[in-house]
Image (tube, one colour):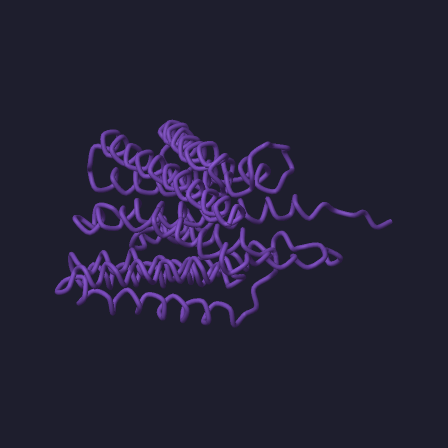
Length: 344
């Protein structure tokens, strides 16, 4: 007799195995900025439950190159006409977030935001560093696509599972407010990153994640969603580092990541009931990967891992608190305008 399987269990296993395998392989191959590949794999697995076609690999790499070229073109402006370049980055961020809220491709929007921020900021320090970031994004996307396909082969979606419903598109006026809110979260911190881009790569990736998360939250839930996921991600990174210290090996790195991803994926897909939204658990997992990946890099480079983690976590918390403040201010400003319009 045929038994029906809950597709959520397959999705949780797929997300956990694909992300963990991508992380271990990225660090094993010593790719530049190795935590980028598992973050991209996580994004691909979370955004869609459908198997990627074979042509998706070249298409996604081409997408990375095209979106990165936007950041490369902004480098001369940021170097020689800083104000104009900064304003163009702000306009680009607003258009990217607005495009996504109007029903556009979320992956394309995310890659454009990374190109506008990470690539352009890296180029202000050194064009070589910008090319290294583009190389990391390209190789990371190739690796992510490979393990996303492997994840779908190991844990396929049940045949009778209905297609994913399309993402709801906001009205143009509402999309503009949400895009403005996300832009104001990313842009001021991007200005700080321009001071020392090489040291703030993890912060930029966290900013991109925050910009996406801010787009789907409101003033009432901002503290729990934004700050809560950041703090939980940091706590899990500390626990992970302590567990990894018992037997520091690449295979244990993979196994521990698989275990942590499985627990968070069950929360993400609702297998373990939770009052938090899927975006909360997705942000928690991405924060864990960013913090842990950079700590491993610090350890390899011979840096003081604990002081570097404390500084990085402090920056993450400060940026998240600022994001909560922006959400509160923008939402209240919008509510006042709506009340005035009703009275008029």
